Image (cartoon, rainbow, N blue to C red):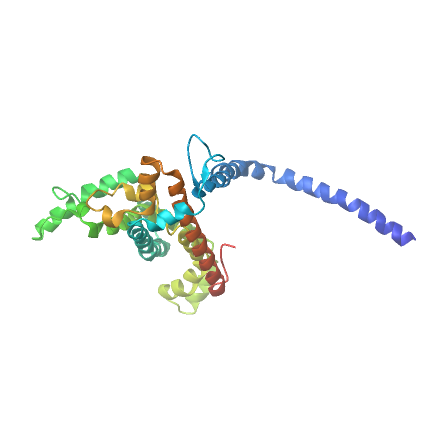
Length: 319
């Protein structure tokens, strides 16, 4: 009888202890919770709540009728999307530029970070790092102005050099064959330095004892990079790669639009620029919402698949 009474008293007191522990936990991390409110509010207001508007992809949306009173048409907007004659071309442009961005643009920040990690002069290292990530703060309009000026057929430095070498001047912005290279390379110049910050932070967390032990064993700097640095930052590389895969079809409207003109749009027009023309200029809200949903579904499939193989291969993933 006494033991059962004691257990009852312990069980009665346990919730009170948990409540006190919970209150002390909130009091301890109250500032962090307050700091997280703006971020949580941003995602709720601009990411999750607007998802409800995706239903207009299945409607013939009328601005005056509103979401709830517009005619429901099912998958007609998706059928229209796949029946559009130029949809295959636009999708092919999007996939091609996204593929080139992953193959050429994604590895460059890793290489830059590995090279800067080998710099021993701290001041020189800071100057180089600042110089390569400053272009990230330029808008795409400014970047496009710089690139178009460099490639100008009359006084652009590239064509001046070509003429000095005995070649004819080339109108790069008027040739379809150059537009993808221009878009991808300008993105590399603008954002590669900024991405190195993440990799340098990951390298800073590597235990220096590993390098000392490898040096005592006679390992060269190249061997240390291959055996210590790259394996240590591999989880970071995989996380950023998965995020890149998730945005495979989401290249960014302004990044491409500033380089397009009637002469090169045949191979430069992507889903984002097509959505702008049809959605905002022609007010086809339901149709362009269906295209946006198509992009999101493809991105979800890619990121789930890539995350599965990443966990199988490296043991790390987004979830």
